[in-house]
Length: 426
Image (cartoon, rainbow, N blue to C red; front, side, top):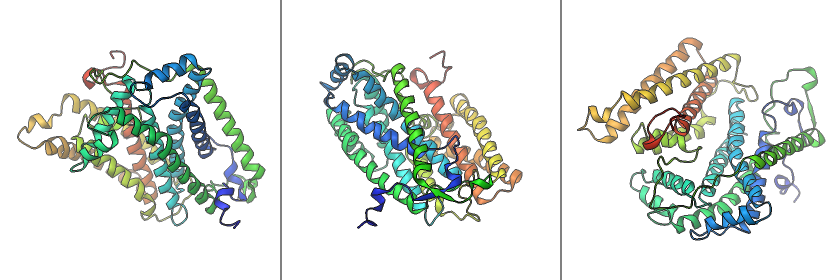
């Protein structure tokens, strides 16, 4: 019986590598992510005492919470801020796992898949909560994002209707999102978290980093050596969130008006990179095909053929570190250039007006971008002669920076009509 309950009673193995408790800039990211999830659940329960999930009363209940309830505004600020930070910390945790190659089979590969699923749930956890205030910002952002599902061939419209509870964003959408946000997603996330920690425990803890000193060799008891440091990291994070929530208020615009659309209408920041891709590709390619391809790449990572298992080693090797830096610089230079060129110079749809849009706005831009990506791969191979481990990490960094550039462009450089302009012009 004791063995059957092990995964519930113990998050960590009894002993961990001495090197793994070394304090670094990525220390405790997994524990801090857990802390924010628990904080989200706790503050969410408090908010449910006041919030009313209906179009007629949702906005007024938020106003009542902020103006009439003692510390109501502060609790909402904490809930909003911890949700935003949760995505950032979960992403940083995934990057740490990836760049230290802690995803190799047979032990850690399934946990990598669980981690990806948890990250997706965290993003949709935030997205479903985005609609709760029922203001102009949330209403039209949800409208934009749910429209993306309609680009899926054959079943897209059915999926959109299911998510919205109808053709448009209405009270049915709010009730659906409220159910997902307060019940289905948190429950699923908690279940996956249990298995995630269990898998880490079975693997003997986090992937041990490279031993730098003689006194970092060997195993040490988890309690108190690891647990005390994790508690300290969690308390520091809570203090940071509580202090920041005093000064940063959760956004609340005017009441939602389905008859009036703001200009521009932007998706939440974690989805705005996909919205930016719609400016350059056919909707099916930009909103469905490319994201699914990249997601499939992430899922398939553990089963690529790797000549070495470098779990715990950052960037696989010193050469791998140089390749990642090269990829970051290349992506930061190439993508803004292509965005500006597509806005002002490249117009396949005008050059080939008789062709279907899936070719002029889908295939041709993909082929053009594929050409530059091929030049990037050619440069990597010629300059570094990399192994599979190093190549995969460099490509991952390239696409990560590409999405970052797309997101920054959508956030700060898109004005009315989603036209490109400088931030001070907006």
